[in-house]
Image 1 (cartoon, rainbow, N blue to C red):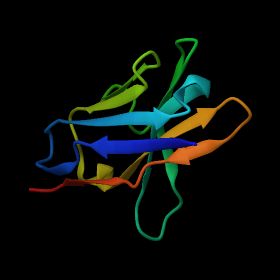
Image 2 (image 1 turned 120 degrees about the vertical axis):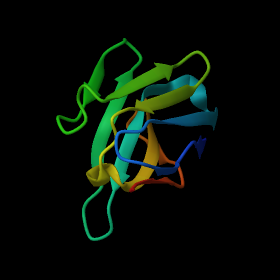
Image 3 (image 1 turned 90 degrees about the vertical axis):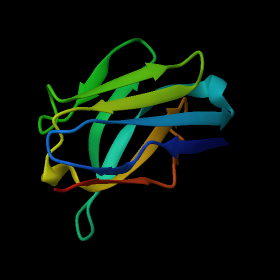
Image 4 (image 1 turned 30 degrees about the horizontal axis):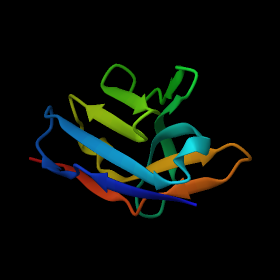
Length: 116
């Protein structure tokens, strides 16, 4: 079992920046993917960006060039640096980790609102 604690959401103006952080605890030795998803009410949860233990990353086209994911598997933390934020980035952002064997864990979500 892995527990996730997120921080860093909030209200920001268009063009601004925010940094989300997530710390995992519990059976962290078996984590091999850490990342972020987001969800808008009435829509499906979508991948934003994720980091794999071997050093590769996946980043959604909609945020490529603006968001950077950084996974520190030794410390069991993952961050999402978001720049040039747009109103369409407004969503509830969830931290996600995947353990060997396929078990996934989710954070409770942190709200990001981009508005003037």
